[in-house]
Image 1: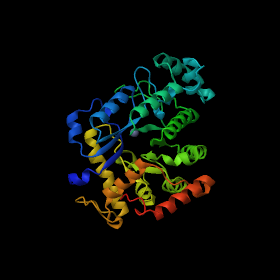
Image 2: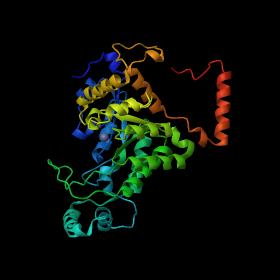
Image 3: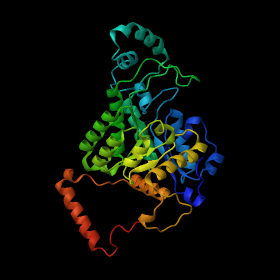
Image 4: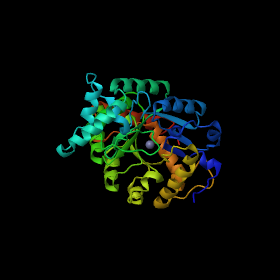
Length: 375
Ligand SMILES: [Zn+2]
């Protein structure tokens, strides 16, 4: 049983990761009924326009997120599930590209079998799309939609390539995609996000260490710019201990939880418990817009229970922090996520940045407004 909320409260709920256009066209009637805000991820090529159109028709409810995962024609892909459709070097032929990726670590004993499967599969695979093209498209989509995020992108060690993604009963090939390939594609896209100052929704499955290493590398490479954007670890499968270390290390990394994915993890309540109250977000990860609200309310209920937060029965505009309920806390987290501009760790602050911070704080103290004024 999911809780029902007063519409005034519901208006402040944000589903930070869902795929409404995955299930096909979303009707305006469904959107009119929607009472929460959703972050709509892109996956397929056709999604790109669908997500953009959805956001244009419902600017108050939809935050578009670009990160193509698959298309029947070009299959250009950002999501780790479809990273094999992107080629890193412009020189390799289609066959070379797929051979390198799919037969990369085949054991000698399996080589004959896998080569046979590979030969059968190859004609059905599209020409790989150059990464530069994928990045150009991402850049142009983000530029056209100033409020858009990057998503869904990430790493997935478990995913096995299906013979046909669209088949009713998906049959899996024995092929996984090398992590280095996934990493190169993820890294390039996050670089674009930093460049254009956009937040990112990251998928990470059985890739805890690789994800952390990448975050560290990106933080180092981008310096203070890294902290201008926010990163959401979507349906995060990190262990509670790893999460605690992650949020300590990076002031710009948040976690979003869903019942559909996170309920499979036995450590979910410990993860919620361990997570700092100001870094947690809620999501449905659903592909049916009518399910977004009940799904996200379900996880909010669990977060509230574990954190010992009450759930608001009505919305009070001005409220001191000690009295905030679960919906308000998550909404405030979302606001900070959306706004970005997190404090870089002090030890990495450059002299110039330190001086600027000092100047900022002294001018703030001296101004008649006092503080930033925003609630
Ligand atoms: Zn997703």
